[in-house]
Image (cartoon, rainbow, N blue to C red; front, side):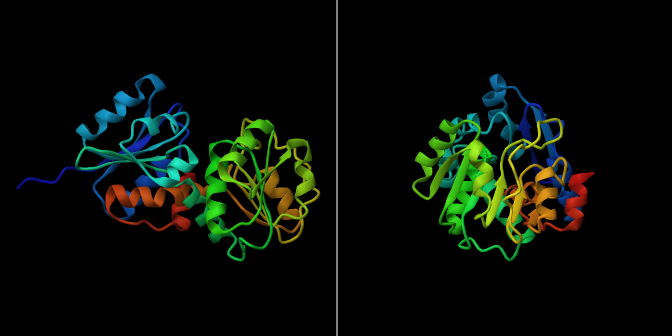
Length: 277
């Protein structure tokens, strides 16, 4: 009797040793009794296309893509979803049986699911959303907030020109303010999102004045190392509803795992514990 091929998946980046995705996917594989493997792969930009195209030959059904390859991987894909095109980056590749490579971006989905689970009372139409940062993560967040029905997104970034490029891409609901004015727009915000790496372990602090935060405002930080950033600590003290960034990592992985391994996993406390090990 011939056994079916064991499905393989993984994550490609450089560096990659810090990634929590292997712990997460291995937890789900074990929980659901699936004979599969998820492997971290440190791949340089020069080798990216060669490696990606060789993976299906070895039994890979797909991979996650992380820094610095999220944009370059788009050029390798045969088909790209509309949301990945809008965001301008992919974090998920699926290798089809017909040999084609499909690219998607599930970061926005993961962001919204984390927000809705961590702050179930949040109403997209309650007021403006302030987004700190204008990188790839910000693009995914803005796309998700737009889809959810947020009417006004106030965007601020240390380099204003980069924020203005996002405004040009996403339209009039995005309003750009200078980074030095970031603290002045928090007072009227219904939601505040930090998409920068500021506040992450080993990075400079987020030095935006936070005294304008109001009780009941939802504040979330995409940084999850540490779990409780200074932004979240100060926001909690101000009476805000805070949501840490780990849940975004967990929820963005759900659709990818389902496509690769044929089972839709559940994000629960055991999932969080597995990712934090």
